[in-house]
Amino acid sequence: MNLVPFCGYSPNNMKGKSIILAGGSGGLGAAVADDLAARGAIPVIGCKRNRDRADALARTIVEKYGVVAPVVVGDILDQTVRQQLLDAGRRAGLLYGMVPLVGQPARVPIETATELDLIESMRENFIGPVLLARDFAAALAGADGAIVFISTMQAIGVFSGSTAYAAPKAALIHTARILAKQWPIRVNVVAPGVNNAGMAEQSVRSGKYDSFLEKGMIPRFGQPSDVARAITFFLEPGNYVTGQILAVDGGLTTKM
Image (cartoon, rainbow, N blue to C red; front, side):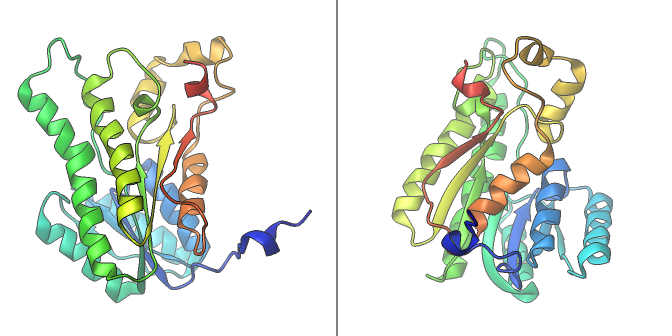
């Protein structure tokens, strides 16, 4: 059965819509930017420091799709940077979507974590994304739009040693559900599992998660494209879903 007429999907139904991707120059962000540009959307690539990597991604996108993707450099904890992202989105097209892909892995056990460790993780993994979401929603002023927060499987399942990282990401999930109820726009969450890009890449390369494969808990490690497709689904215009969490983890959290 062809489901396209029922779900309203069109490969070009995002044409001209600008999507802010804070932290959009990394492995996951690049996959999302590519997927969006392929559908005619305009990714606004935000990066904290690595301008060269962001510019290279923007060049690739314009070469492949003819889409000019603006680049904004800076920390979204800075209100000025958040405003620059919003302004770039407005100039580029119809401001429509926002995906904060920023964060830090906070690989510190709770037994030795300092107050500063915990505060820093909360700032990077929760406060920055939420402040950007607040400013984005205000900028829409009631117009149609969508936010997709990025959490983690560690915020859904129980993983020993993950407190410093998982707690802010779990707070992000609950906040997303509150905002989906509170705001007139769609707010959803994608929770990636073990992935060959993003913050899990280093752990995958170290062999930390090999046992998940050996025990058959997951069929393979995730790819950036797996996460990108989930994000794009939530961003689809006319999507009938809000306040939901989609774990893209090969089923791992069902087995923990």
